[in-house]
Length: 98
Image (cartoon, rainbow, N blue to C red; front, top):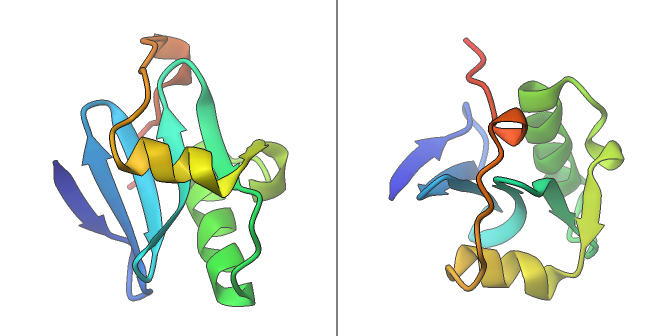
């Protein structure tokens, strides 16, 4: 597991295997899963959390944060808990942005 703080915000990305989970404060709110791409929660927490999600997705993909797949919060929770299956698809892998 690798922990990466996102700038000076209260957003953190945890890497588990090939998946990446975005936490806003202490809540998992978005994820990247190989073979599925970027996923965001359907739950609204706050304007700040929405900003964290959008900035993270836009930073990796260049697409608007609301253009990725929206899933139930329970699915984001399952990914964060490791209760999902990764599907390797190199075309869906995130790229580092320097």
